[in-house]
Amino acid sequence: MNNKLLKTLKIIFPYVTLALFIFLIHGFYQKNIDDFNFLKNLNKIIALKILFFAFLYIVTEAVIFIRITRFFKKPVGFFESFGIMNATYLCNTFVQFSGLGFRVYYLKKKKDVSITEFIMFSLFTILIEILTFSFLGLSAILIFDFFEDSFEINLYIKLVLTIVFLSCLFVFIFFDKIYKILGRLLKLKKFKYMKTINSFFDNSKDMKLTKHLIKLIPIFVIQFVLITLVFYSIYPVFDKPNGLIFSIISSTLADFSFIFLLTPYSIGISEFFIYIGTINFEITIAEILFLMNTFRIAMLFFFFPIGVIYLLKFFKK
Image 1 (spheres, one colour):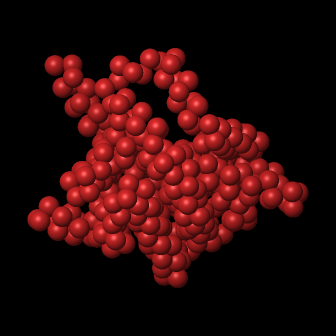
Image 2 (tube, rainbow, N blue to C red):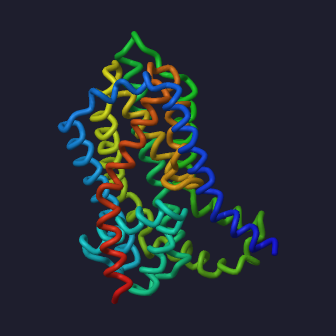
């Protein structure tokens, strides 16, 4: 009974959170209509720029999935990967982690890839993503601080990005040793998936794990630039200074927030991350809400129709 209750709560919780978030936004809008006057600055050129960069971002997601399948020597074509990633985003919009579940199902059914090994490699992919975004975000902030004296960025965001970057770098360099130490301390041999996980780490050198992960870095650099360009394209609507550095910090924090899939598409979480990280900028809550939800809508514009078509085609076979 308790297990059924927990499963039900896991399903309901994201939607309750989402409903609460929408309710709070509606209430906030009603009480602060004047804070949304900047919407009159939105035009077709800005909207087309946002859509263009959002589309390219989804393309990079498809390229990453191709890289993942190549690691297992079961590569998929670009258009197939593009459909899968649109379906992934579509699934995640409604049920948390269902996009991951769909990719697992696809790889198991179509490519006979081990579920455990795919999840392990996906975790390493996330590690490299955070490593790349934290490095680029931190580097941009330090360069900005060096050349710009009139505006100082929050010290806490610098410390957080430094800790995140160094932690990810440490794990990436010493992951094999860390795994062995944790295995001894936590007595992980009793874990039923340990045989597959051990095999994954034992074969990591033969499978050229590090080489495959390093090849992902340029793609994540491109993603960093694209998300920054999405936010930078939106920023003129606010008609405020320091747009580039704000967009860089926001793209870094938005990417971090996508890992915490507590709500559909990290609604509310991304906004909170950006608000805390850019608290010394002259940016209002209304503007942050518009920033993130414009990005979400731009992504939805593509992945909803493409994802639906792909899923119908996939399950029809």
